[in-house]
Image (cartoon, rainbow, N blue to C red; front, side, top):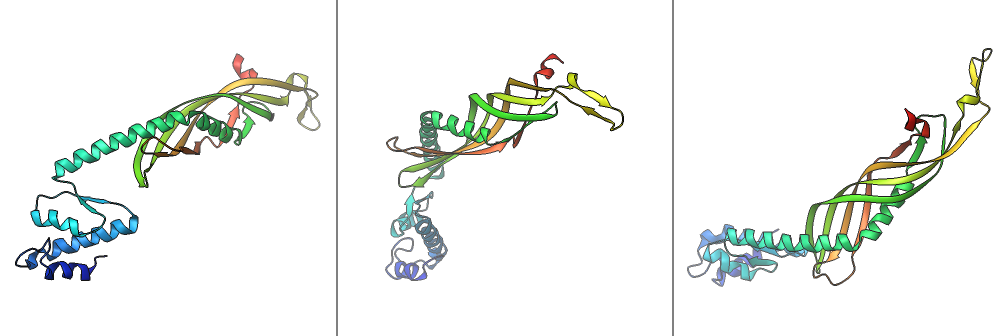
Length: 235
């Protein structure tokens, strides 16, 4: 919300954007500057203003949280350069946090539900062995106090071993009275499988490269994993 008292103080003191003659036509510009400044103070952000208008340019100096950034093309060039710097810092943080990212991905994977896809049985234990992934930057921003935040979309593959226990149908006989198979044996085996997954990373990092980096992994898919027995290897 604009600060009317501040705007009228500038008007009566002939300060920009009003200046000599008080120029009542500048009231809309003054209220725009005041509103932007109030939002910047609330969000603890600096607002960059691009304008060729001299009164508007000089008026920025009278409002906290506002900074004149030259012409529009200069502002766009500044934003692009700053974004490149942030992206470089985000990529560096991503590389530094690789071990923690892999650890969290494997932990999320182990917490999923697992079931035998092609047999009547259970998955007794799952042991993920390796994880590989590709991370694509979704956004990066300055959150203030020299700290950046970046989000990455992740697609990858986890290789794992699974211990399975399921009915041995070769040991089964058919009970004609009960109309069902009676199974007398169980197969226990370990298989090596891989699963494609999707996740997101939220990384916080120091913009100057000096300080602590942190990462939070959000697992997207899958929610359950079907594990094929060794019988499927021969199909």
